[in-house]
Image (cartoon, rainbow, N blue to C red; front, side, top):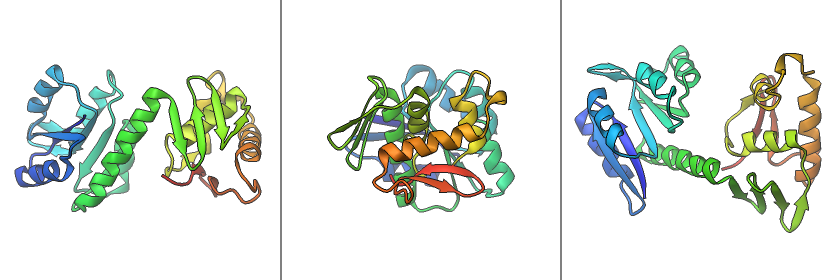
Length: 225
């Protein structure tokens, strides 16, 4: 059973969110203040946090900043402000996603399910998608029945892309997270070479990739869900 903590001071909206999320495999708990939320987190385990930015007893972004010092719990920000600076600030502080008010409850459910699935994949190290099977803990990778041999950097790149699929990761971010020992001295061409080698192993037509897509001027993404 997945457990979601909803921190939202608008009681009607919060109740609506909880009712929309409730299912046989998910339960949602509503808190209307940060103080109340902290008490729940001290005694209960949650799999995801829906966090309103503006709350009566504090700022959601500050709460997120403190949370990230001790927890990797997935967080989706709820905000009435769609200014780019606020969105960027939230993501830089460690939010996994954001959604601006007003929003569709169906869209919110989809975002929540996506984050829960990604969190599960990161925990068990296994991803199965469109005939591919990637086991990052055992370092076993399959394209259909064909076993693939991947270098350490190819494995790191693949894991970053598939566990964040649908999200564009910048070249600089990928370089920093793959070449952790001395990213300042890595030739940017090293990433392009690793991308090409991975495409050659994974894609049916590497020159026209279906999954490992280039987002020109930004970086790369694994397309799909």
